[in-house]
Image (cartoon, rainbow, N blue to C red; front, side, top):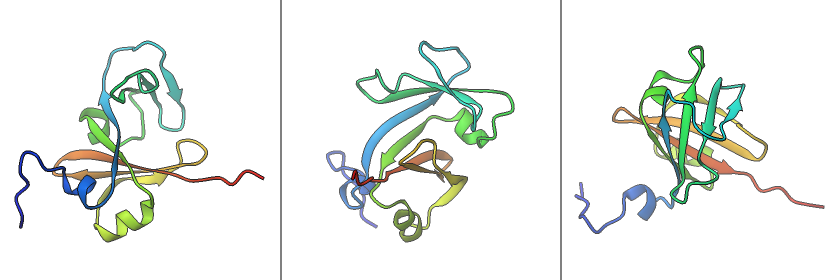
Length: 127
């Protein structure tokens, strides 16, 4: 096993081609400009205005999201083919694949106790 040096990028970026998308941080405080996602029973904010891609997430008590997602910050990566990445790397899903909005597919995985979000943006052909 190769040990990564300080100046080297993580394997997921360097070799697998994943791209940083955002950092999701759970909070119990109401944040400015929250958007409610009723299917997941939580509020998101900050993503569209943060120059660093920081997204705040405030969950309702009965949110169906995994408790790990509700309590531990997650990093999100954009991937070209979600099904391929899940199959080739044998990643542990902690939430079902879901489409949070049209043209987007998301998988939440767990690695060493940390949630990681994988996002695939589907391309639509305009006629």
